[in-house]
Amino acid sequence: MNKKAYRIAAFYEFKKLMGLPDLRDRLIGAMIAGSVYGTVIVAEEGFNATVGGAPDAIERFISEAESIFNSRLEIKNSYHDEIPFRRRKVKIKKEIVTLRKQVDLSLGQGTHVGAREWNELIRDPETLVLDTRNRYEVEVGHFRNAFDPRTSSFSELPAAVNSEIDRTSYKRVAMYCTGGIRCEKFAPYLKQEGFDEVYQLRGGILRYLEDMPAEDSLWEGECFVFDERVTVDEGLAKGEAEDPSVFKNRNQE
Image 1: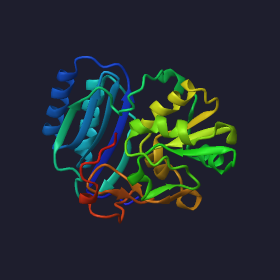
Image 2 (image 1 turned 180 degrees about the vertical axis):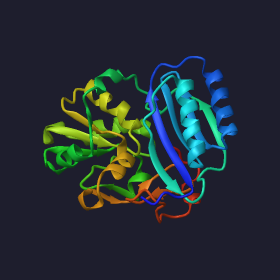
Image 3 (image 1 turned 45 degrees about the vertical axis):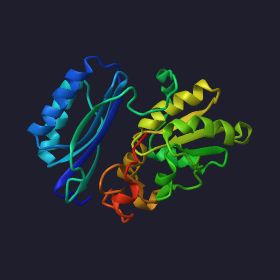
């Protein structure tokens, strides 16, 4: 990959957090000190972030964030010739991704698969490939033969799945999203709902594009991202979708 001037780092984790106002203050301080821009969401259930800056500044911010969250972060990286954020935001929310359902996240253990295993799964006609993203995201890119639930927000997904999926037609469900966070909630939710065999793409589309050689990729199109790049292509460079104003007021919930 041709690494450009600025690094964009995405990371999340579900873990119990306390003292959210203090965490917010420490994070925004670290962003200001390091000339890092982007958005961090914190909730009692965990954190979700996408930030951009000079590579060395992002490295320092990641180190500081690991100290703040007392965690070893799993980072998904991409690069661009500009920082695709204009502001610094640290938000306190009820959920880091809004499903509005009580979910036992422990049921998601053992459901993650890497890029190679993912390819094998979604080639199987007995696998329902479920895109857990919103309609406007699916429009610019998706995995081959994926089911589009045509939702406008993540919280609409349970109703869409319950009304539109015939469980008797498939042996298993394999789901994906941009960076993995939505699947971290929705895989265990489906287990709660009685789906026996459920899988999720580890690290989402962004990790898949990072790990999978283009000649073996089953991804079609570009991947919508929640910053001013709008989309990234298979090489994780800025895509060619329309101007960001087309997507204004939309968010990853």
